[in-house]
Length: 250
Image 1: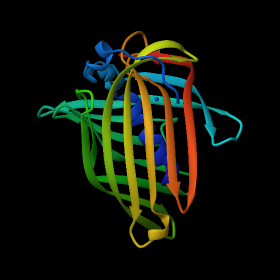
Image 2 (image 1 turned 45 degrees about the vertical axis):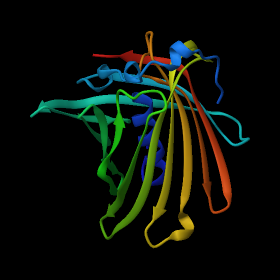
Image 3 (image 1 turned 135 degrees about the vertical axis):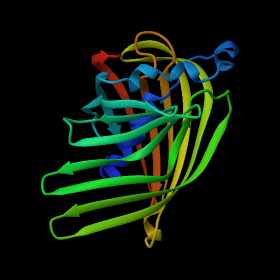
Image 4 (image 1 turned 180 degrees about the vertical axis):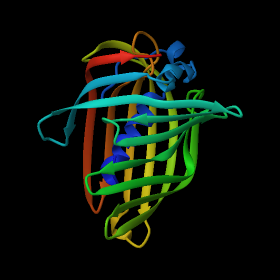
């Protein structure tokens, strides 16, 4: 998941990577690495009325770690003509994130949000794809046009960004986290973002995510490390799930 414009991109990216399937590693063996990634996608995350609330610890570069809450509530879900359409809210209902499940993949289409005195919207063309069952070493790539708009009572602003997006399933690892020890899928995503009309704002982000492949929290992003390079500056953000407050899977 992302969030709103740049912030929402991070939240939306976190949601899609985390629920799909979150620096450090742990041991691995050939039997774990040979498994595909399907165990790391928990269909229950996308059923009506599922609610998840996780406390996360995040550290940006060398700054002190900060705690935040990751929320995931499925507010509506329906299947029509073989396509499963899901709307997820990461807050108290002001934001709605649009997913579909089709063709063996989770597709992120964008979001809409209402704020005080303003509304914002993001759309992805085509939808960002996360294949559910990937073999170790398999990668998928897309070129996506992302449109972000923000409207107030007197004006509307729009930003169009071209994304070069690649997602790779690296295999399985056993990792130790604040929640315990887990077998996890390791994914690497790279996003090169090129805003139209603003070449100086181009950025390159590489994210490694570890997603639980078994146990009570299967499908949850356990740990994530993102490195973003932009305008000659490099930022590293490390996020780890430190406490599960609610894990009500339908």
